[in-house]
Amino acid sequence: MPAPLTTARPVLVGIAKMAAESQKLQAKSRVDYFEIAARSFLHKCNTDRLPFRWGINPYRGCEFGCKYCYARYAHEFMELHDPLDFERRIYAKHFDADTFLAELRKLPRGETIALGTATDPYQPAERRYGVTRAILRAFAQTSGLRLGITTKSQLVTRDIAVLQEVARRHFLTISMTVTTVDTALARLLEPMAPSPDLRLAAVRKLTSNGIRATVFAAPILPLLTDSDASLDAVARAARSAGAKGFGGSVVFLKPCAWQVFLPFLEENFPLLVRRYRERFERSAYLRGDYPERIVERIARIRQRYGFESRFHDQEEPELWPHDRQLLLF
Image 1 (cartoon, rainbow, N blue to C red):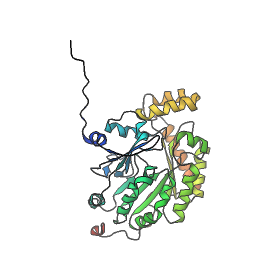
Image 2 (image 1 turned 135 degrees about the horizontal axis):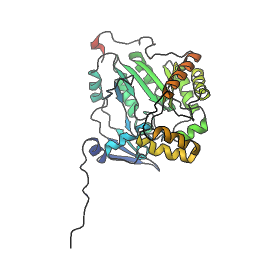
Image 3 (image 1 turned 90 degrees about the vertical axis):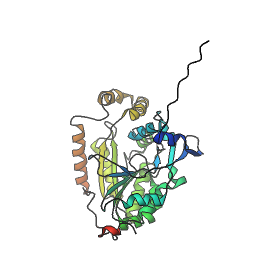
């Protein structure tokens, strides 16, 4: 009798092996938390399309469950191929301050770093594990960098004291993502994220405490959030909250995001399904003049409300180093 056929399991290496060996920290009804080692906290962004050279993600995965999320592919590197794993399996990176400070020490003065490029640094896991706050405390021991933090959460206001110290030493901007001020639509698109009013209240609190904050309407979704009225409403609310800048970018739907976004459309906006299929089934990115028209619309709105147009329109921080050796002290 022939032996039964067996399927060999793939040999896991790198980040996939680290994920498989991660210790489970806690389980909730819809989310499992793990701790994962971090060989490096800084990752280099080798593209001119982004306004920063380095990125930091304190967590792998994000609980907010945004239907359009482009970052779901990141779990595929850990051999987790269900796109919903990105919001169900959250990995908190083990943080070592000395190792991180050694990474920062290698950077030249004025280098640009974005915190939260593929996961929200203030998602609910941050209340439990505090990796983001630990990173900020390390930045508060250094000086001479350009740091941006992107979030959808009012939890960022918890760290106002340490952010104020960071802002004394670095160029710092908090970018609050507000896709729409329509609360009902936001709840459909971003089911576990804080409501738009909470995010805007956080912007108001940050700016009233001397911390530079901007609002970013992203992603801009065709036929859902791309009208002048929709974007103007976000910009008007941002200006009222004291935001210094306003911007936006058009959605792109990689296969991992399309697998989640298409069923979402079919359930909630079935009349838009055909239009989205025509635009995204062959390419993750919109082509033609549509992106250019959105850029022009954003520019007009920015001018309408008098928003700053450049990141560097800031006063030099109080403790900005003029000697390279003052970067770390």
